[in-house]
Image 1: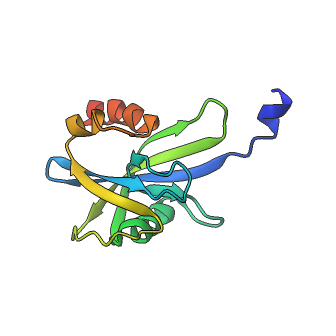
Image 2: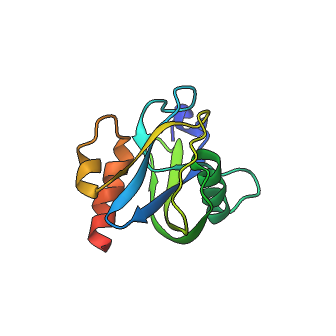
Length: 137
């Protein structure tokens, strides 16, 4: 391992996949946060002392104001440089009234998998996730 890799701190995060009929929830990240303006599934960094399932429940509440339940881990991905490790989780909700938190997100959309695949400004790891997800459904 070279010195650049050994000094890289890995960020651990979670991503939630919320399905409503044949559509999935996608958000556009606020401009003042990491990857601002990009589209992705809701999620964020796991805080110290949190489990991944606790983190995704908190992140959904913080970003879109929804109370969700973490069902199961679907997939994980670590960037080649080791700087980011994400877990994708299937989540459920009993209501779908989005309450956008503008400090976190600028917009949201309910889209089919096909619509997500061609969406502009989508974070690349979301496409990798969809390849895996489609093989599961």
